[in-house]
Image (cartoon, rainbow, N blue to C red; front, side, top):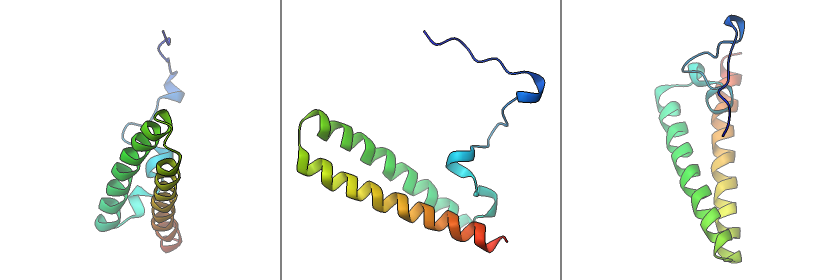
Length: 88
């Protein structure tokens, strides 16, 4: 069992903020935010598919899904990068 995490008053996590998943969320247009959400949903599905392919020993399927994951991650990073550049 994992023990609960305790935070001091100075270490309280900020609710609704995720540095990794939405670090540029406030700088994105509504369309960009919607696309980021869509990409994250697609990534979750692809990671599940990848795990299943690995478990079933389907090497070609694993390679195909990994290529899709890489493409989705690149698109997500590009959107976030341009949002950061646009706000500078």
